[in-house]
Length: 165
Image: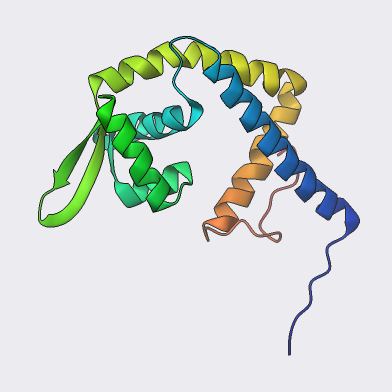
């Protein structure tokens, strides 16, 4: 028997608002960074910050693709450009002739430090100023549950805490 799921109008509109808001805000922040001298493009920043936060400041290519939500083909091209710019380097994986880590370089760390204040300013202008602290906590909580469920880590509707907890 096929199970048919019906979305109520409020959930469907919330989904659409999320998609539209994410696309518009991300595009505007990328545009803000593109206009600022010395700032990294947003996609470059996302790759480099994922490496900055990783153990030993390096990730396998498939881990990096997951961290930045890019296809492997797109990530490979982006990593090629970042490597050519000296912001990361590929490091062979011991015992895996075809495997490679993407590792953050000192130049990549410096570029992150230069870009962060500009990125923070854009986040504030395009997103953070529109939320109170309580709203920010609720938004964070909701999207942490959504992400955990998408990764198969539970947090389904029966396990979700009440808003604001």
